[in-house]
Amino acid sequence: MGCHIRAILVAGAMALAWAWMPHAALPADRDVPPTTRFLSPDGIPLPDDYRIDPTAWTFFVVPGFQDPGTSAPSLSQADAIRQAYPEANVIVVDWRVPAQVETEGERSGLALFGQIWGLYQEYQRAVGVSKQVGRRIAEWMKARGVAPRRTVICGHSLGGQIAAFASNACARSELCNEPVGIVVATDPAGPCFELKPPEERLDKTDAGQVIVVHTTRVFGDENPIGTWDVYVSWPETKQPDYVWQHSQAREMVTASFVGSYVIDIDGSPANADFADSDSSDAQSRVAQPERPPNLAVASTTTAYH
Image (cartoon, rainbow, N blue to C red; front, side, top):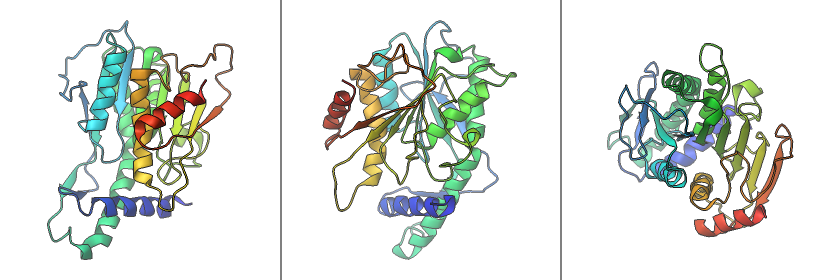
């Protein structure tokens, strides 16, 4: 499915979900660049002179499209990492394309097409600035002496693609001269990325280990693009909740940091010994979770036994 058609369908689904939510937003001036802030696991902006422990592992949490770094899922994942690795540096990346708050008139049912078109344009802009956000992360790392080989970037949806761009930027000679150690991408954005050349999207060569959790075909890239690809097989239903399924990819990984279900610090799925395997060969596993989320995590664990 082409980029534009798929992006419009995704925007439509999001608009329908948001039509009844307060404080929805439509795109602002297309020329306004994205803003990028770096936050603590508590959602507090870090000062410009913030310094990390260069001997410890560093984790970045990168949310997706219209998902601020201060959202509950973003901060929950950061807190889970902090609990799992108390000595680690944990950073939340709060990136966003500036938007304007819509009026009550724009929120009416008659304006639904306008909402869909506005979200489509907003998504296109977000895709267009994703490499800029990735480079900003790499620049922040270089300025503070973060060791890429001891860095894990966890990105959800569009954040998964940004994680790849950040690692690629790190590898440039003027920055860190090496990619990051691990990228964990949870249902990385498919619209406008799927089937593009590897340099234009998440790919298994972007980091030492690239772990990808696939939960949807609508929002995420369904292709095997990591060194390890985890496919979640959902129970058959007449009306699949794709938005919920998309969000569960991140929830599973968040739970994994507390219970060691999916990801180990060495970049391999937990409960499996891959020390002798060739990390350049993509591997796949299939998990079959059921609702609620805690059962999904338990089923994922079984997939790796």
